[in-house]
Image (cartoon, rainbow, N blue to C red; front, top):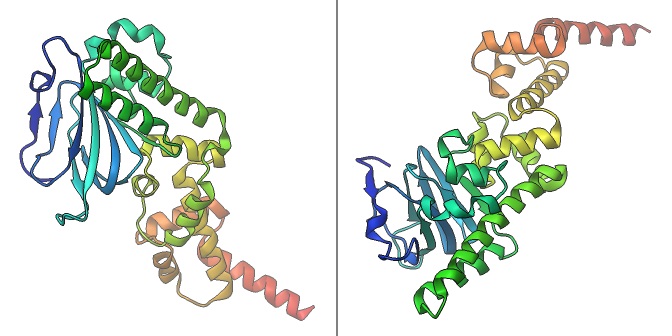
Amino acid sequence: MNGRIGHLSGEQFFDENMDIFVNRELESFTTPQHTHDFVEISFVGEGSGYHYIEDQVIPIKQGDLFVIPIGASHVYRPSSPKQDKMLVIYNCIFRVEFLEKWKHLLQRDSYTYDIIYQPHQCPARWLHFQDKHDTFSTIIQSMYREYLKRSIGFETYMTVLLIQMLVTMQRFELKHENEPASFSRLEEVIHYIKCNYTQNISVQDVADYFFLSASHFQRLFKKSTGVTFTQYLQNVRIQKCCELLKSTDIPIYQIANQVGYLDMKFFHALFRKKTGVTPRQYRQNFQEFEDKEISL
């Protein structure tokens, strides 16, 4: 997104006696990227498109939920200006001060707590969840109905639903931390890496592809594999190098280029670090071994 980033104030949305605002918005291309002085929970209710947040562009679809802290710039865009490509977002915004008296109900050691109460200390710049079982959808739609109808006690009911939403997020976090297999799409991630290792892929590229924040993806990946994403990608590339060195006569610099390395100095240093020898020595050692087997 180019151009000046705007700013939205909570005074534009909150009623005089209300600290929670909920709406259902059909997104377009007219709203500028903006920051705000309140916390926003947004849920993709229908359609697909893109979430421009800070310096990232994240593909989104129905079921994606984001927690956007104070000061983070963002805007939603449908995938196309055509009317048949709509994007419907439910927004729940609230003042942090409003939740101050409910802090004791939330687990302190969590991203959910940090992103609301101390975003500058949180490793993640925003939170991103996937609603696979309509858990968040049910809560956010209940909040929206309560906000529209405003029946007796609706303020209390909306407060309860908001706390339920936040506690549910913390349960999602806890589930990911306690289950190495919670990275249920690990096989898909590995397949993606092995299909794209020749490209200049980064942690952010893969995290975006699987609708995760980069920090959350890295934590899950290392817990599931025992190595970082970068280490795993390097291992895949060097393993492919070894195969090509053994099975072909392709020049070493071409092999390096084929697996994604253009910096030959870095490639040689990495190969030696991983195998203990240079690419040339690796090829020679294998050829000598082959010749010895043939002579025997």
